[in-house]
Length: 183
Image 1 (cartoon, rainbow, N blue to C red):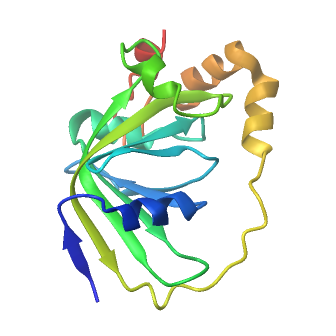
Image 2 (image 1 turned 180 degrees about the horizontal axis):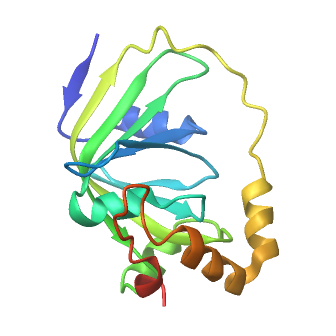
Image 3 (image 1 turned 180 degrees about the vertical axis):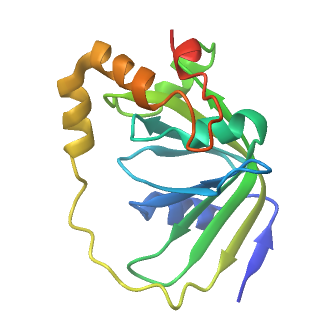
């Protein structure tokens, strides 16, 4: 059933490329565990032990708060069509913000997304697969454009005001440094 690997194989990379949805899990030593669904063509494999995903503005900013002090992260993909499989990537994450030297290089890997606030880079130390035979089958209909439309309508100044109001700390009160890191 489950197998573990030190890095991504081509089979894993091909599986990731076919997925429309992934989940990110983070926590500090004493915070709530946060699990976030992600989509929108926001995931890239850099190499067999490095992946990156673009994080757009949302109602919270838990991942940024957690990674600041506890960089461990788990990313999970599940096959909702085709052969069953669950793929988990475990490792240490870094948040890259607009003011960081790496931003331009990493941002160039993704389509321009309104409201982009961080790119998380994960150094993978373990890849695990499991059967996924209990995961239901779903048909992919398409991406939602609601979040992108909302961010476009707000504009850069509106997004910054939203960060100030809603994204400066986690639900456990951990600072995200979003305004300091994004200018």
